[in-house]
Length: 100
Image (cartoon, rainbow, N blue to C red):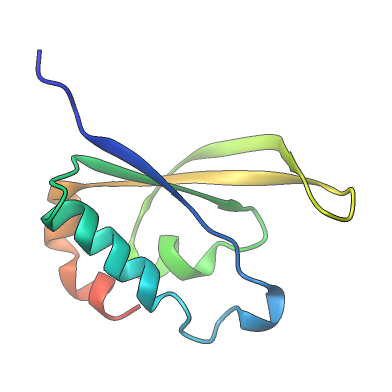
């Protein structure tokens, strides 16, 4: 059985920064992961109120919801979403990644 090469990418953007094309660096990290590190799968975890940047633009597949996943600096408890993309999916979505 072959060992899969899998990594997780976590990110958080302050609300004023959302929707302003700040995910270019994340797209470069994803591309580097698949092309240079030869990863088989990259998963991303993000707060449930921030779904737009990677999942919708780069077409990550939604995997699930982690309820009460993290206590924030202000004491609030936040849910996180888990999305993923395989190397094969990334190859077919290269233009979507480059447009982030």
